[in-house]
Length: 243
Image (cartoon, rainbow, N blue to C red; front, side):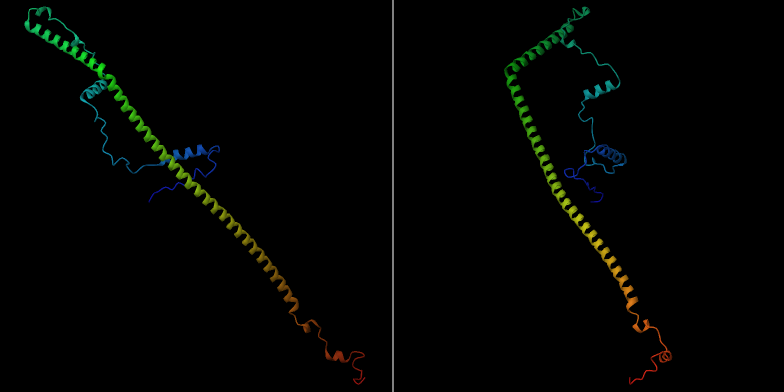
């Protein structure tokens, strides 16, 4: 794959990570890499555009606008819980009294509904709460099983990585030992070749010196004696050959 980065590191095999300055140097390299790295690929292009207002309701939007405009929140109105009589000027107004009666009926119905809810909660609230707790317990149990499965997967990945690195480390050590042996053997061969060359040079030198002495003819080593001088030599030319 083009642009693939091969991490040349074996944390389970390599040594020296605890030495002073190693961590600082690694962090400096990471900072330098992050400073120079300019991503060219959008890793979120397969996802739809982010819609941060999808969960907002009209009430929430209104409240966000209020907070953005720094408008104080309206005080909770308790008017709906009040039972006011008609105004003093409308004490004889039938419509005003009907409105007050309707308000009282609504308040009474509201209180009756609250009482009904309390009775239902007293009768079924405990069981509903227990059922809710059982659902929560099941959810927690499922989440714990999922966490255990993920931890097991992570542990298996770590073991597999450690096994691969251990095997790779042993292979690297064997190759390194083989390399050292071959380098040592090559060095010994080079030394032997150098000694042989020195020996050959020495033999050649001695051989050349020997040729200079032995290759000269024996007659050339003796001085030339003239024949007349040899006949005139005393005691040589007057001797009778028969004697």
